Image 1 (cartoon, protein in one colour):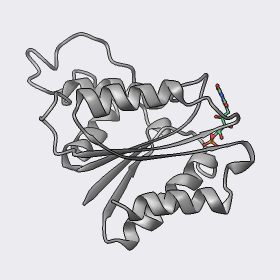
Image 2 (image 1 turned 180 degrees about the vertical axis):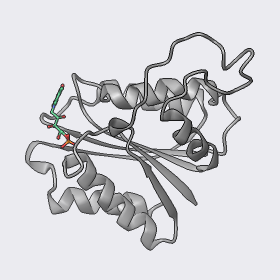
Image 3 (image 1 turned 60 degrees about the horizontal axis):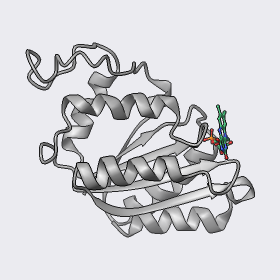
Length: 174
Ligand SMILES: Cc1cc2nc3c(=O)[nH]c(=O)nc-3n(C[C@H](O)[C@H](O)[C@H](O)COP(=O)(O)O)c2cc1C
């Protein structure tokens, strides 16, 4: 399967990246094709809500930023993985910008996407409700994707072998 990871962490050697690397290891070992878009380090602006995409643009976004590199990856992917540090009880703003920009192409049934997974890292425990709410409402209920699983790691769990193994197993389970 073609898997696309949207990485919302700005830290290339951080806790979110550790979960991603373990997930990738598991998925690649099973023969899946994995691509990663480091949306936190790309130039991706927030949605303007101009509706160009749903009118004259016929599905293309009027903003000519790095999201134009992510759209084709989203259109090819069968599995989407949202990976993010928790910032103020939700996804990082950078990942949220990329998610909002799905609006141009992401009507239910329009994409090849079938499944969704999520990797979250945080300082504290029990801070995931915001991200999980969006995962369930936007991706499972609205877009109709199958929940493939969620791995979270907080505090000293970050980069622990137990959590990396959990992420590896999620990647291998797809
Ligand atoms: C702007 C900002 C906001 C944060 N907000 C939270 C929060 O609300 N709850 C929490 O538990 N951790 C919070 N954290 C901590 C990060 O989620 C945590 O350090 C995470 O492991 C960072 O992942 P990274 O290494 O991929 O950047 C915040 C960190 C930053 C920089």
